[in-house]
Image (cartoon, rainbow, N blue to C red):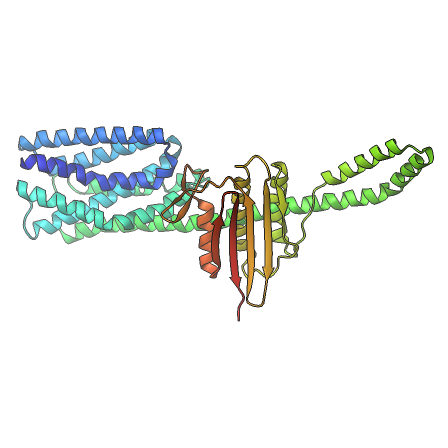
Length: 430
């Protein structure tokens, strides 16, 4: 009976490591891939449990087996993840190395502590040791998961293949160094051996911190590139419109002469057709926004073109100067809101519109963006879920909330069966 309980505990021991390798990538797996992943991982856990039970009742359980089977299970489970998400193999190996380092440090800590207190020799000690390992891993689990989410998960929305070529092997290399440096028949015997394992883990954690910092830098660069791209698009169209206006002034006298000829000939039908063609040509030209802020003009122009492409009526403010944010952050806020507005409009077949209103009084500036949509909103734990991301929390909404918190901007979200509305209130200083 003892070995049955120990076998169940052995399965429990692997769960934190499995979750640490799965959760940073959870949103990338399709439902079918998740079923395959959980099925194969479950089979690996079952096989490990069978081996553990058979070797245990035969009395062959020892340190060599325990260390090797933990290493082998980590490699096999990561191999399964890589086969399913081949394009992310570097990130998966980085995560695998980090999780194995964590498990190794927790195991060495548990054994070192038990040998200096109650001992670590009999079957009863195995029971206490496994339970302690699981509890230590679970207690520290949120710390390790947050590190991976800030480094690995945050990178998943960006093109980072070249970046990961330089860092993926670091945690794996550190784990193998620790694994080879410690004899297979023993765990850390001295405090210096234990500290060497922790030094490796701290170094790996520092690498995670550096990756997270680089993610922030790259995100800032992407925001800047997107803003510059919108402004370039805006100024290109502005230059083209200036050139069209120059040509129109040049051609104006010719149009007058043509109209006079139609009047002279009393050709009302021909004049009407000529006027229709002129009107059609003028309405096809892009409307260049001017709000007093060139960065905002670029964002509005980009989404005005997108709205026109999808048959969406687009209304924007005449003036946009006193928002109180850095232009880059305001453009990210406005861009995310308009991106969501366009998506919302695409859920309805007719009466599509986006309206941007900016007004102010003595104490505040208010930005309101409303759009048509189908009335379908999914929420979980107070957060709206994105249809683009298979009903997971939307990145755009999270980004907007983060910017609002940084500047102390009030953000309110309202909707009914036909209209979705976002309201931002910027308080003026003083």
